[in-house]
Amino acid sequence: MMFQDKKIVLAITGSIAAYKSILLIRLLVKAGAGVKVVMTPAAKDFVSPLTLSTLSKNPVLSDLFNNDSWSNHVMLGRWADVMVVAPLSCNTLGKMAHGLCDNMLLATYLSATCPVVHAPAMDEDMWHHPSTKLNLQKLESFGNKIIPVEKGELASGLYGDGRMAEPETIVSFIAENFFLKKDLAGKKVLVTAGPTFEPIDPVRFIGNHSSGKMGVAICRELASRGAEVHLILGPSSMHVDDERIHIHKVQTAEQMYQASLKIFPQADIAIMSAAVADYTPVSTQLEKIKKTSDTFTVELTKTKDILKSLGEKKYNGQILVGFALETTNEREYALNKLKNKNADMVVLNSLNDEGAGFGYDTNKITIFEKNGKEISYERKPKQQVAKDIVDRIVNMLYAK
Ligand code: CTP
Image 1 (cartoon, rainbow, N blue to C red):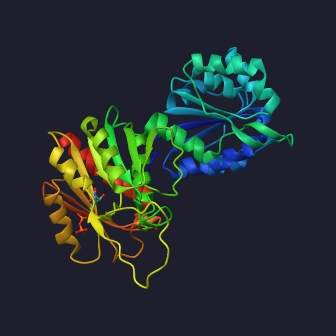
Image 2 (image 1 turned 30 degrees about the vertical axis):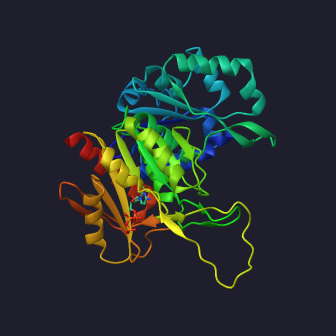
Image 3 (image 1 turned 180 degrees about the vertical axis):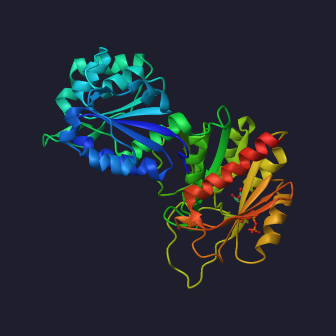
């Protein structure tokens, strides 16, 4: 589990977005975290302490003094691995920026020794007020992190900037910034993905059903672990909006080959997940071909095998990963590919397995490694399959 044994203080302030903290707690607890909630008195008007204590399985703290006894905010700030303020209201932001301390949440904030991350929520005009900007800059200068607000419908009924980030975004932000292994920091990775289209004439091409989903999932996993990712993507409908992934778009096998060759010498790892056309028309007609004859033949010639070429150029220490998609003699063909193409690892997906291969959101793979290891995995969502593949690559990288 992503947050196994992690301790998180969730600080909730008085904002309509407080209802989202309920979902946030559920996500954090489900991911294995221990969660303790501290809230401002105003937050209680938006969400009930009973709901929060039930979901977090811990008492909710709000008052500095309880039945004449003092609540220990210092220990709460020391207990946590990270303190998440979500939602952060304008009022609490202002107080934090100036060191005010008139409730339990602020006392916890001021005494926290762990990293602090804020998810602000406010109406657009408040969000754009210069004092908000200055206060946020102050929190950043204290070393706090700010999760950007989103655009959308606001409590005022207006549409604009100021919505609190969605709970899923907050969870990924925390994972990414505090808990994820950055075991690929400083490493450059080349990934090919998607199909290639080989033009017959200006309107027709030879292509295949590859969606590029598996390759893109691998890129996301690599980027989240700190790698510099270069994705050479064939004509795929995948929308990659991750700024950590550099995308080089290509159409044909030849273009994919040229782009790969350019990046490979600087790469530490190359993962060839593209379904590259094995054959391309000998010549492309410049004008659209008319249907004048009853039969029609297209002469094809072999494309360059990118994986094989990189295997020949590979120098010491570079890790080269190929994919195999087979319908028969899977194991034998996969092992042949490993050897013939001088790869370090081949990921096999069999078209005989249900829910594996083109277009599906799941995949079922077996990994064959140069050292003779052979590992079969269950059918899983492609993002988890990507993690399994990258785990094996990292293992190989550091075993060298
Ligand atoms: N590949 C490549 N360049 C090509 C063809 C394939 O880089 N022109 C890569 C794929 O990205 C994949 C691996 O080679 O990683 C396996 O591709 P596949 O087409 O299944 O294997 P082939 O070696 O072409 O063998 P065959 O067609 O005989 O199965």
